[in-house]
Length: 178
Image 1 (tube, rainbow, N blue to C red):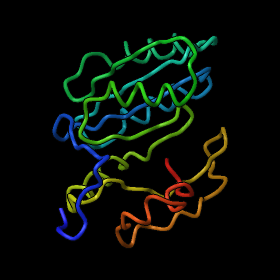
Image 2 (image 1 turned 90 degrees about the vertical axis):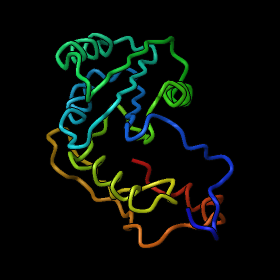
Image 3 (image 1 turned 180 degrees about the vertical axis):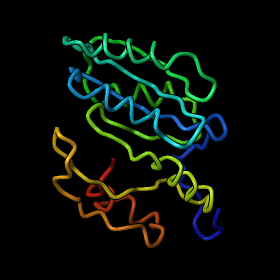
Image 4 (image 1 turned 120 degrees about the vertical axis):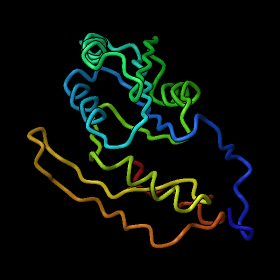
């Protein structure tokens, strides 16, 4: 940690060392949840914990999640924790999954998003190289149902660390959090 910039007081590093927690809120996500979960299995980084919160879906989301969990099976390098709750909204799901997570690293992932297979490995490597970092932001792409790229979002590569002053204002509000 840099002596010039101490870690912000609201950040309390904790969690099981080297474990990456992928936190997924889902509501009526039957069209996308299987692909989202499959991209996790393809991650090159291990160990991974997946915390799935089904926010009272009324479609087949619950059945598809349970089917995927059975297909993955019990593994020591990929642990899945699944909670089904009454509908409370996205923020409540994110908060609950954060509280349920046990990992040193956290990756938020929506039920209609995909991760590049090297996403966790490369992000965690960056954080290990510079332990003063609290957040790593990646470039993103949007895609259509046929998985063809439809747009590349303009998120510049991190060329420097942000100061505490920069992270309290609009800088973070306009960052792409994928």
